[in-house]
Length: 269
Ligand SMILES: NC(=O)c1ccc[n+]([C@@H]2O[C@H](COP(=O)([O-])OP(=O)(O)OC[C@H]3O[C@@H](n4cnc5c(N)ncnc54)[C@H](OP(=O)(O)O)[C@@H]3O)[C@@H](O)[C@H]2O)c1
Image 1 (tube, rainbow, N blue to C red):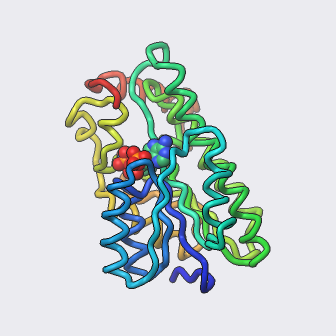
Image 2 (spheres, protein in one colour):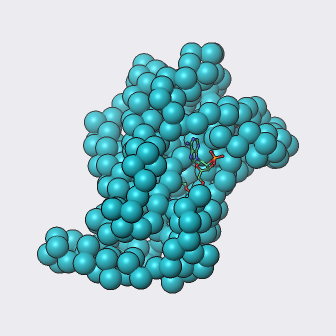
Image 3 (cartoon, rainbow, N blue to C red):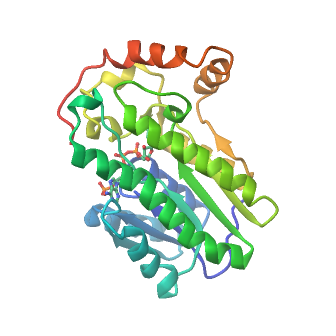
């Protein structure tokens, strides 16, 4: 069971779509008050209305570009600093792109590093301080199965997720016995807008076994409530991640290159 202190909120980044939207629905079913963050204000407002009706608890929205400079500071000021303490943080907002690194736009790469890593660490550090003081808290960081191996044609994205996994696992150990759980959620292919945003052609990701965003979100919330360090929602993914430990380190990227370099592309969003 997820139990946050009375008067505190769950803060969910990237709640306007996909996995974040389903995490927000899952928290609403658990009657957890929430602060929802993304850039799409209308989508957030519609979701907040639905979740207030579903849960009967407070659900507020904050429209913010989390890849912008100083975003974490602004978000912490609008939540913890504005009398809305955060008892549960879900760092879900993120994006990737598909294609050889030499063809990637540098500005877009830097925005990805900011969103997937810099804002995530900055926000986590700011919100963990009051959680430590309260001796209670939850952090769910959305990584990816791409965290477990270098992925040619998604080089920077996979590296950002390797960072999120490593960072989350280390924090999990640091905070053991202090009333704070840090969980890395590592989904494989999930049926969301992620692939279109990343520039994969429609249907290109269907060659991978996929899960719904709701299944992934529930796996994350259940893992968090059980105090897990890492959650891999798809059993097939768990199997290749386990097997990958017993092969030479140079082999998985070669296999990934053979699979990923053949996927059809469209224009990234
Ligand atoms: N789908 C997959 O196969 C898969 C697999 C492994 C891991 N993941 C990870 O799961 C997380 C969620 O992805 P998803 O699959 O749910 O993708 P999605 O459907 O594209 O949702 C992405 C969410 O992030 C928000 N977001 C993107 N850029 C933002 C920014 N600059 N500032 C604030 N919010 C921003 C989007 O909202 P706005 O556009 O409204 O800002 C949206 O709510 C990501 O971290 C992704 O890396 C996805």
